Image (spheres, rainbow over the protein chains, first blue to last red):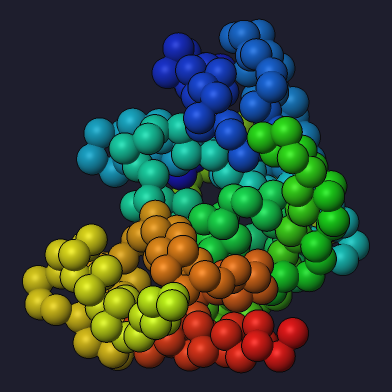
Length: 197
Length: 88
């Protein structure tokens, strides 16, 4: 994983955001994106002091297959939201998100000093529910009828995970520093999380 | 008269063997995810299979790894959900 720049924007990346199937379970599903939108999104993320946007690239051929976003919600409490996108269909169902999220959460706990990660999804997206619980996260809230999906009102599920819960699910990561070189931040990567680490 | 409710163990083993074609047939305690027989999409297929075959709704709270780790774990969840259905 590495930070993204404008050079990573192209038809490939833009195509993900405008693909109804890829965005079926996201709030992006009813929007159309153009290159300028992506530039603004990346510029915004890269200049932010509370967000870290990382691209997920294959080891074999350095192909951009998805993103992970860490968003610090409360630096004082050390809480961050984590969300993701896998744009390349051939990488769906192969554990890429779990791998990327586990590395990012480990990085957040160990390197940034964060104390808790939160994440969420609409209830029909059960793959995402399973992914969150696989990360050790606990279901903390069910927001009844909070979103619309296929013209139906559906619940939104919110999950949270503390370090002890995460490392119970990923004991091999507990004492391992894995973000070098697995996660490489560029020299102009944003400093994130004032006071968070 | 309705068909009798299928037995979870044999139905699950048959489904997994047929759908995912593991090198050797799974047993009650085969680790399904750890041994990479079932991936995250497979979990969704298992959820759909269980809900359809056993006429159950798996609550969001039960969509977690421990309930899908092995055939035995899924059977325990199915048994519990059936009991809760009966009690309701």
